[in-house]
Length: 442
Image 1 (cartoon, rainbow, N blue to C red):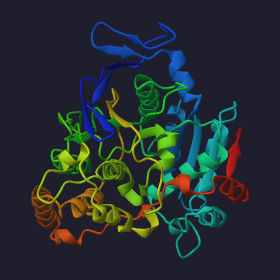
Image 2 (image 1 turned 60 degrees about the vertical axis):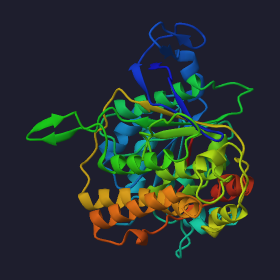
Image 3 (image 1 turned 30 degrees about the vertical axis):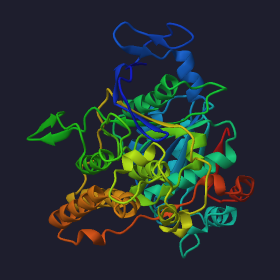
Image 4 (image 1 turned 180 degrees about the vertical axis):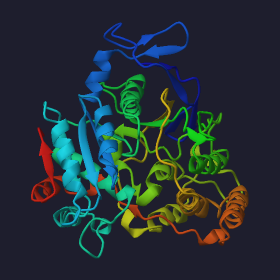
């Protein structure tokens, strides 16, 4: 694969966010055994590097009641070296057992040696395992993992960390993609992003996240496919408000964030274990929010810019305490603070086709995204900065105008502790007894 070279990087403390780069060649060949720079500000990632990274990567596919042909197509697109992790919340009743059908599809697909895991989100043993291992917050009153996309992704990560010791990278692919070529490209983008950032390397200690920006999200209009739609309705709102926040805290030149809501993303396993993660649809934008919260621990005195504080001004204990107290379930410490984190944003060549989403659902999605910024960034920093107060008020007015609800009534997302706080050996032992767990060549 060949991508353009990063041209600019924005910094907030130890967090580096690269300006979006693009895929310019899906197959760049095996020109050498290492990255090959072109004369046109591009970099080629050869087969050997891609396959080495993909062979150490798990792709988590959260799904719920998708048509069999859609599931089959998504699986078809995942590159052969990857380990597939299917986390399903599909119907599982005597009258209709969609999970059984999904497992059958997965087993058929893996008949020639592909590695895969599958588990049902509402498996009682899985819920008990997560609770015993140290995350009782993710379990509901029925004893199973809470419903929600974020919870499915967290369960998939926990399953991978507990049962797949060789996995160094983990990526996510939505189960609703209609074109098998799209998830195939996403996985290769993940590997290319890691390669461009310096992976795999035994001396590499930088945590890396790769986030995909679709080249287009086509719509059918007047009987024709319109490829001019470059940004989803929810993404456009969340990107806008996150960028407005970032303008106040950049340490140097700004870089636009185009991937706040990116469902297709990947990260080093070391980073996945250290991040706090949010439930439901808040999980994707909360990745940025959690990283920013960690970097903005050092804040300036009242009415001065938080950007200056990133360079090393005094620590304000009340702010640090407010981070910990926002949700007691997320207050357990991880060791991410002070370590370098790089976020790469890469635009795909393929468009992303999926079913049209209702307006109410889109409003709920961007509302959840904004709530992560409002409650976890603006609420904490507005006490120290007048510009944050203004931005918070403007967000409240926007939400009220678009939804008819009081902006300050936005519900905060549920936030879970980092997975590195779990007892992974105990989790592995407990999960092996889950009735829905399927292990294929793993």
